[in-house]
Image 1 (cartoon, helix red, strand yellow):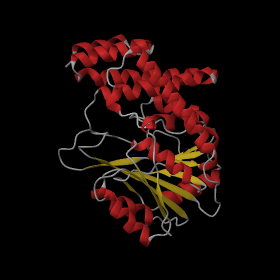
Image 2 (image 1 turned 60 degrees about the vertical axis):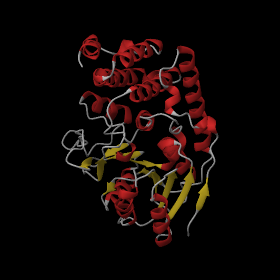
Image 3 (image 1 turned 45 degrees about the vertical axis):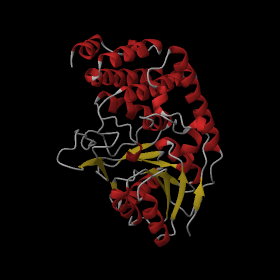
Length: 359
């Protein structure tokens, strides 16, 4: 069966990044209110999504945007999983290449595939729409240009069921598109995390932050659907680094987390990808909005204050250090933005000096 959906999203929800550059104080406050409003709407949406079907073990949600070159290998790695009781939800996020043709080709061959077509709204909205359709006992977010080991979902499912976990995490390797692809990314925690232990989420988050092995990427997490329904408010729209919200929120709420020391995921580093792109104001905007939202959670959860403070210090110091190659005007805007949002307090003086003096 092929399920086709056409989604029309209001212009208000598009929130084009170009319109958020160099925001004044008042506009920035309004944007934060808007992101908070969207998060509230997403929470309502998550509570009204499809019922869980016990016959479907895993829902795999894959946003697709102009990845026709790699989509075959990504879909093959999912369709050929040793765990067969899946539903595969593809969200075409306004692709202008041959992606939709490939999606329909696979959907004709595999009746586990559903697909949704929407105007380009970025990955967060695509994932939220996929969650609305998901009915599996567990949720896994896949990217459309990457590859998953064919036994990964089976091993994750069996471990979660056997140990009654909220979610399980694993490792990844990187695949470079060309010999000139930039960046070195390490997602290996083998030998650093006790794989026999059932972790409390905050305990694991603290441990990973201290040892600098905390990865805010959803494709390293295999999560119980009922847990997400209860605790995850949805991905924010219109910004980059929205993945952070997902990982931090499930970490803060989970009490039973497992780890499999296997590099199940192969992450493709493309020259055109967000991951490989140079650091810019788009990154600053994304990180500061995400950090502001995460900090706001302490208003209702005082017990999270210490771990969120640690996360903000680790993250924002890295952000400022990475920003040292930005242009002078962008540095000024970044500093003003940190001051307006009361984020400067988390950054060490030495990193501010690197930010201003190193080019």
